[in-house]
Length: 331
Ligand code: AMP
Ligand code: AMP
Image 1 (cartoon, rainbow, N blue to C red):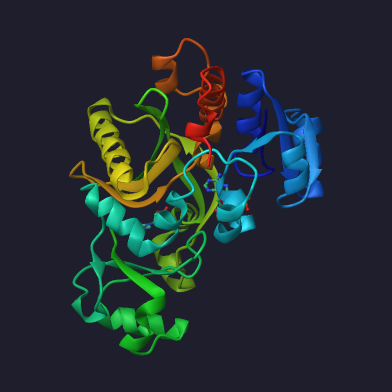
Image 2: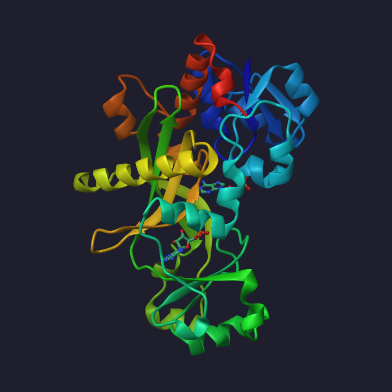
């Protein structure tokens, strides 16, 4: 068995972790990425050109570790149909890709979520408006009341309530972004807090460098295009909140979709009232784990050797292989 993933996102970490656990590794993707994985950072034993070279992967006895890039490039329908063994539960894909199903999952888990306004005329505080399927906050806008909403919505071609189907209006929660990364081991039934990051986003993190008066003159909107990730260590008294949120998500997934296992991440903000408000779940490895190739403060507290999320995945695969339980963790 060899460990394979799409050459982008968190592939360096995944393949490094797999090598550390003694697996041979495969990266596949764009030709331009090859030197990154074979020369500058030699973590891939094989590099195959292509978005998803199924035949070669089957021949090499590969297991694919899904990432945000893999799923985005291949598309959910093809991921659901792929023949190469996939680490994780494919059932989860449709739950997290549909904003309404995702919300149902997180509501059932009793997490604190931003309020959603079905009727823009009910808006009674700041909101963030998200077109469905928008990436990196492209096309998001903020509005302070319903008049402001209708004015800005016009730019997206939204003129009346009939046009609202393509967007979601969420309460804008003022707080600092916190993205805890978890790993749930299906083999030993335990949840681990792997690490925490916050994102470094353009232009959201650039606006503060411009004086307020000039921001107004420039009529700037906010975008959230991810440029990198910044490691974070949480105030210790918040750790149980974050861990309980992860436990509840896993428990609910068991009932709704036959389980969530492997890495996942809750994306939210912490308010000044110390409330963790979650606006999204990523049910696979997130690139926010990349600062922790050599482990994080949290993985160090649990293990006596450096454990990244990528390595933790490989440890699980190794254990499954040894105990003849691969079929339990692959779909
Ligand atoms: P890429 O392969 O870099 O084009 O990324 C594919 C998807 O993963 C996009 O939706 C990105 O927003 C997301 N992504 C990539 N890198 C990161 C990162 N470092 N932090 C958060 N999201 C990321
Ligand atoms: P998303 O693409 O949904 O991950 O959102 C991109 C960014 O928008 C996040 O990183 C947050 O900074 C911000 N954001 C999203 N939803 C909310 C919300 N309900 N309240 C405040 N900020 C939000």
